[in-house]
Length: 241
Length: 246
Image (cartoon, rainbow over the protein chains, first blue to last red):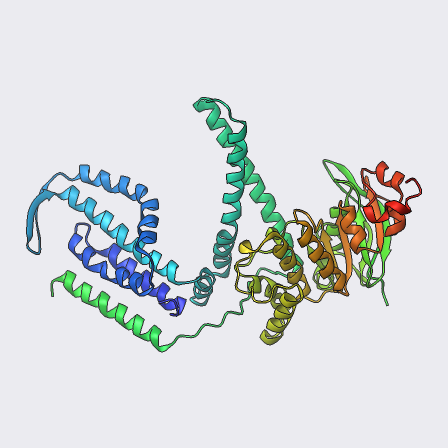
């Protein structure tokens, strides 16, 4: 998996994600079938399950809240048959399970892509696929400087903790948080100006050049073909052919 | 042959803070290693920015005979390379190699030439084998060396550095001094660290309040304890014995 061209993996992940999103809202069984693809990627890429679960859990609260709302929204009862199992549940619960299932499966696919592809290769792949250079560059900067920003935020939090000897109350806490966010923003703007200076000093004229060589190999063809067949099979299954 | 840097009557100021540099006149020969010394806020960094055409004031700055104006900015920046104070702001590409290759690629060189120059620059600063490392995974000393490599790969005649030894431990500082001493380019180094300036530079220009206060051999300028004290600086250990006020 790690040796495949980033473009192949990126396009396959996009195709897979779009397919899963396009599935009917309550088709939990199809989502479960679709899970085979990311699981295969993660196994082939030797991505540790703990890593995948941890990263899915980090983002899950946002989707979980959204999914929970749908459970209350639709209270009509539906009869569900899944293999040898048959039970009655509400339409909302089924939709909720569908949303969570789709989120987990697409996130797993995305984690599979990111964990088996170096970020620089991913950026180069995006550029070769015709994504605007300015967008690719912004993503590169985001990846490069997010660590510095987090580092600065941690330092500020540490400095605050060192001087915060009692509970200040919600109002004061919010005021402090707003000041810290403001300072971080100002720091970021100043840093952006200095980075721009460094780029111009080295002849940057708005166009990003790259030396990265990318070649599609036989394995890329096999992977793309297998993904296409898998998605076609799922499509036919969904249509009940 | 034109001088590396020639500044004639240069004055610059911000609207809110007034004049930062006033009537600066100096010239630097090719191959010289010059320390711009002075307290914080003296105007050292501003002068370096003016040399690389990031700010413009009144008066004239010639870089290798080319006037430092917006019109000539590209030409000037191909002759003079700037190493910023914070290497994290200098190293913005995802890997060390891509960062070092950034400048040569913008110069429109062939792929072969870009690779050759970048590999040579990385080897010169002692980071061979680390080409694929993300810059944020390098140590402070390695980042500083990498920042120098990003400029060396463009083969400039003149290199300016702003506070290059900030947050370096003694070993990293000595490595950096050895590296810079081994290079043939003209160096203009703005620093508050007298030890660093004394170890590397043969000439010192003392700036304070936006004016040139003293300009001469580093040993002579920096051994004047009274002069140094008057401008919030200190005499480096290497020159203490030579101080007339010792």
